[in-house]
Length: 131
Image (cartoon, rainbow, N blue to C red; front, side, top):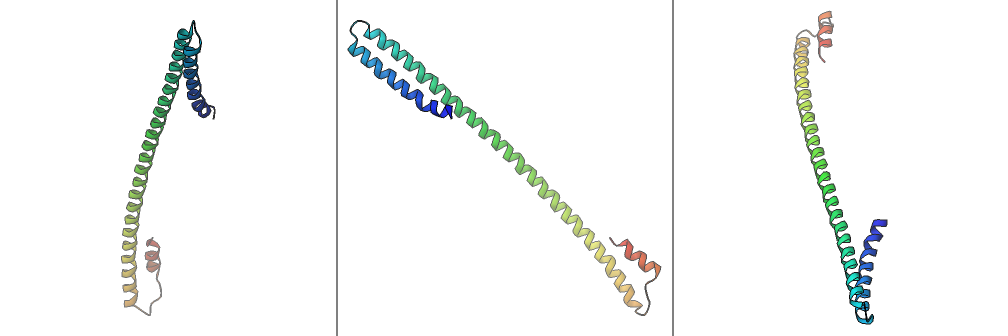
């Protein structure tokens, strides 16, 4: 908050110094030019100081924005990698499901050939092998 207030106060002080220099030049008879010159030098220094802080602040802000862009790009790349991994896992799960469905279809066909027979130990083992 102090820097925000300082950003408003510095130009006001500079303008007051310029007005005081003009007044000193006009109303002070002996050393008016010297006083006006000194006040203008102080006002110019104050304006330069304030402008330097403003430029440095904009540079800091642009550096922060660049860092934000880099971080967002990193997050986007990471989310793409996660999406690719999820798609690969989905394809693997679908392939496993298809293989299991083939095992179940073969087993159902074998049971259909012998409708009166109950489950044997081999049937139980084949069911356990389907994951």
